[in-house]
Image (cartoon, rainbow over all chains, first blue to last red; front, side, top):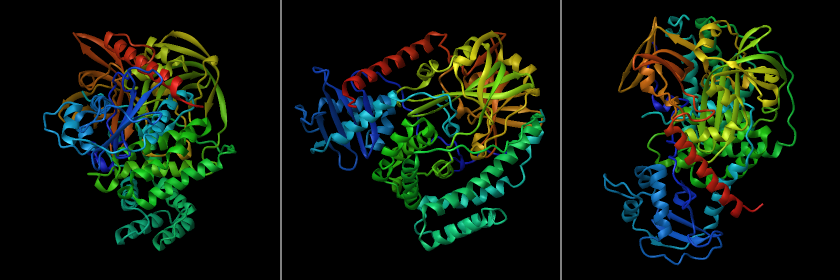
Length: 167
Length: 460
């Protein structure tokens, strides 16, 4: 005998957010569901120094896309731009379509599988917004790889088991 | 091992958890305007520590909270009370485990405290954010409040002395960010977030992260297995091992951790760690390592540095577990780490009946059926729940999260009528099979892309 499993609310090591899935980063190096937006960075196909910062706001389904130097994307139409479409596709690879749709409050069909389906359901409309906060989130993201490793123990990571073996 | 001893409840633990649950419930709505139920829970917390040196401070903190004039100092007192209850639960549970395993444990030495200078502002910034969280409550968090942690977290991560707090706050804030706004969350991870918040408040107190005295050890190190920890922006491998010293075998751990990004996951994480510890290759090759004057904390954590090591002879973990584990003595747990989640004691299980159903995998031993903690099994190695269900022997970590569970580090299982050993950390030093190698190559590619982007876009 052993006591029964506690409900999720009463567990110290309860899984709250499923780990991201790996994906190829060449085209879309950064995507996240944060600050009430699907947001991220898309590398320019023509200029290696340029990236596009795209975001879709969950609350009202407005979107914006501009370069890191704050020039507006030339491809903006009702329903998004190519960068936003790439971003939505990669977000679906990284988080799964259900989580992306739920976060941006898009009502997709049960059999939806793609970023395009999420965008079709959200029907984004353009409203200029600042790209700088998203770009700085990306730079912060990149900065993680510059931080040093350590062999001092981090006991608090016992709260964060590496998961993902439920297969 | 006397597994039947683990079947009986440990005195006082469920009572302690009941008091903690009341306090944790108050954090859901926030401490700004506690209602009747929350006020009763705060009084219960004060009553639970009324016979301890914390009594006066906690009683005052409870009064001030109820009056609506809570300060950082009062929050610290409430957290101290909660931590004392869970620390005592930890001690009682671990004592029971040691009794069941016949394991001797050194007492905690009355060590002098080190000092930590030049971190006051950063710790104050962390405390201020944690206060705002407690006042807002989990239901009151929004995107703005969560992002207020960003600057402090970045600075904490960059200072290795403060990395513990940085890595904790970063993982915690990541969960809050994914769940915000709190008002519309379907469910709240009440215990977990109270745990993370409370530990962060503890570590943000001046002196909590001061370095402690470190000794040295020498001897032959025989790895048992690897425990892997990960949140989106951090990964840690913790090797559990038996160290043969002149004074007999000792249980030790050796850790290596690094910040990372969320898209580097699964078996891709090992390559981030490998360069910093030759031990990971030794684990994969199933070799011992000979240590000379390796720094070690009083808590049994080796502060690994390859310069104190030499590659040793082949050493098979099941042989180590069968021959050495029963006699190995364990290190005491540092006071500020005492919480049931920290219990991760290596044990060898044999002679059980494994069973799998929709709810998971269980191992039935004489006097105890223990659940396999499949949520702590990862995809960064070849060990799967199915292999555990087909196993006849298991090296695992005994854990407690409301009840005892086993986290397998390695199993012996029948595969095609042959007994084979499969290790969760088998790929630590390099993947052996095609699927693992492919995942490694993909992760290496991802890291390369990000480093290229960083080289072009990061301004210093």
